[in-house]
Image: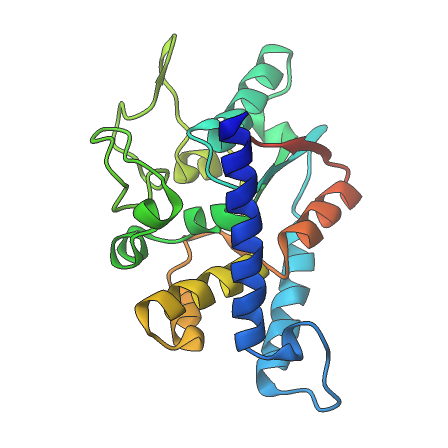
Length: 231
C-alpha cells in the first residue's frame, strides 16, 4: 500500500512538474497562435512523419506496449515474450507488428548514454544499473553487454537495439521530453529549449519522435494493435 501511494505521489509530482515546464515554454504548446512559427512548421512535418511511420506496422498479430514509467526489465521483456510466444504458436517475428511507446518518465529510455551520464537520469528517475545496483549512468537497455539480462533458460535479448533487430518499433513522446527537459533545466539552471534540443539530437537510432504518447497509442490501435500496459 505504501509503495502504491509513493508511486502515485511521484506520478502526480511529475505531472505538476510537466505542466510547470510546459508553461515556462509558453502557452503555444496547448493553444495554436494565429501566426504559425518556423518551429511549429517543423513540428508539423515531424507529426506527418510520425503518421507515415505508423504505416510500417504490419503483421498477422499486432500489439502496442504502453510504457509510462521505468519498471525494471518488464517494459522490454514483454515485447520479447510476445514475439517468442507467437513463434511457439507458428508466427515468426517478421509476421508480428510490435510498437513500444515510451512516454511520461520512461522517455529517458529513448536517449543515448551520453545524455544519461550528463543529466543523471538514473539518479533522477531511480533507475539502477543491472550489474552495480547503483543509479545507472548509461542507458541500461541500449546495446547491453552480453549476459546482462538472464531468464530461467539463459540470456534474454531485451536491449532496445536487439528488439529493433527483431522488428519492434519504438517511439517517444515529445510532450514528455518537453516536460522532463524543462524540469531538469530548471534544476540545473539551464535554458529549457537548449536542453530539449540536445535531447532531440541524442535520441537513439530508429526511435521515432511522436507528438504525444497517448497520440501514439491511438495511432497504433487504429493500425490494428491490441493494447498492453507495460508495467
